Length: 447
Image 1 (cartoon, rainbow, N blue to C red):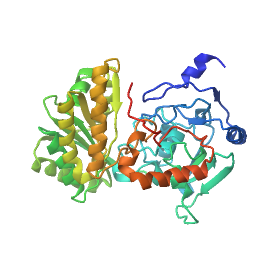
Image 2: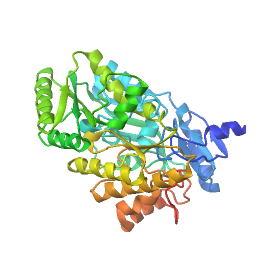
Image 3: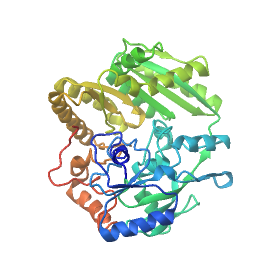
Image 4: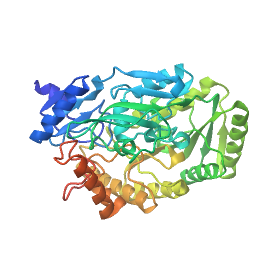
């Protein structure tokens, strides 16, 4: 095998480069199962991989071995309207599922920002979320059945095509979000829902990031449930305007984009109520787009944050520590304190409505002194989220990057329970080894 091919499979959207020994591409589930049997017998590491957009090191072949390129398994995409389900192969792009469901008047709600490039298999492995997670939930809430190759090379089926299924342990939910450590997903049955009749957006502009956080909490506790609530702080507003001028208020400390969906009549009332609540908490201005074109421009601004901020410095560390909704204002305040304490370029944006704030640090990995400060700041962000009753990861997964902090959130016994499940499923530790569970003495490394 050509070394350049091996290098092509040595990295993902996070940090670190690890060369695999061999790459496997096949659409045959039986061939993959036979290879897993061989790997289990010979104790060869296996790394399932989709499009490698992972931000936590999910598919990195940290122990060498075999990479299974599942992006080639893109041959099944069936929409069954009468059952409200989709049946998909793991290599199908998430956006293709969105399109196919929409053509039938249906919706597959999980919508990670990478949906146009990420595979559904990767979304299943990481239990991906996205902006619509606020109202509709995340990937695991829409998976009702799986076909999985176990680490010992057996092909099993979990769940099925029925929405209700309480036969035994819920192995479907166990596998979804297990980051490829318990098996290889080769087919999934996904639940679909009817597409909402209408949608509308408002933009609320604030002089304080903490006030923006308070507005989010106030709206959510009022009984209104928007489909999306996206936050952009001043650094992300400025970065987007410099990248592509869209008329955003660069002097504002923060803005929130709020989307509502449902019946047209209830929509209008909810938008007016939310606008009023934002103003009572101190919003400087609330803008309602006059047409769908203006609305699309606002959501385009949110999509442009990631490409815009990396023009400032080349290295972007995208975190997804998540806190309870009531703690959103406090987390906003703490993030500003961490930014100032370590003198880092911290940008806050993301799915604020479900507490998934996405603090991003923009830096240069070649500046070792800066990276020292960044590593300390990231560790403090994780600690703060857990202190506030939150979690290390809302949607990116643990992978290699967050493994050192697992015990802090789960406790020694909780982590040990997970290790014991892994040991039963994968006695020879061949399936995506080096992920989720920390090695002795492992520390956060971003270099």
